[in-house]
Image 1 (cartoon, rainbow, N blue to C red):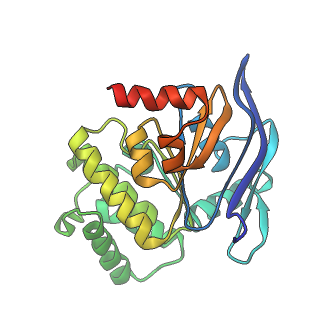
Image 2 (image 1 turned 180 degrees about the horizontal axis):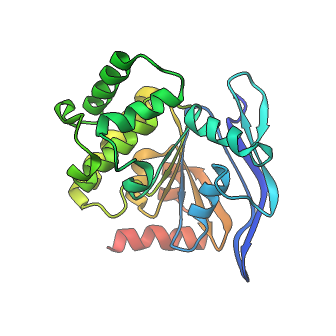
Image 3 (image 1 turned 120 degrees about the horizontal axis):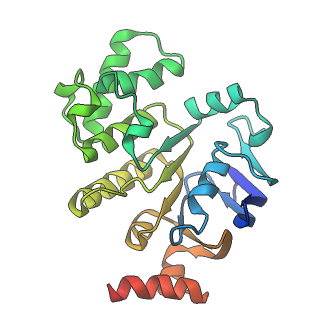
Length: 257
């Protein structure tokens, strides 16, 4: 088996008396999709932000293996180093698309901005690539010059995904990417994400409270409760034969719905 792309060990973080992360160990391998599931307040979104270098833990380490095979301590990097990593090797898809888009520039500009941050300077190439990616996320390339505010919530999320993936990152963090959308929109967006992740061979940390989405997208599931990992394993095994009482409760609540 190849070495982990990213691995974290002993992550600890408190918010007052609340243990948001309580000794979390987690890893992800190239091309693997890992779903982090649990109820609200379980620590899953906090974990995602610590892994992505957006928040520091009080204890523990997050190590990322770059394309040259060198291990980088994420929380020892400078702010500029983290930004560069997020512009190149990493991507982050927010639950609210507006948090991941520049609302004051065009749809094409949003996609092109990330290409420019990665060093692209040819305007014609940037524009044609932006149009191509709008098509890949099932948006009308003819609307390339329209601002994000002209699009529905589901289309804004598609635009955020195009912006995130246009530079072919190796690792993508997704925080409830279908949360807040209508059920029919969620289903189409999940199918799009699944196809793109498979096509591009991405490694993905995917936070969700939706068990069905976890089954559809992930190879492996990590179950969190009160800041701890209580169960993890291959997606079908965890969902079809849950071992921990909390996981059993999560799965049974979906079946009863």
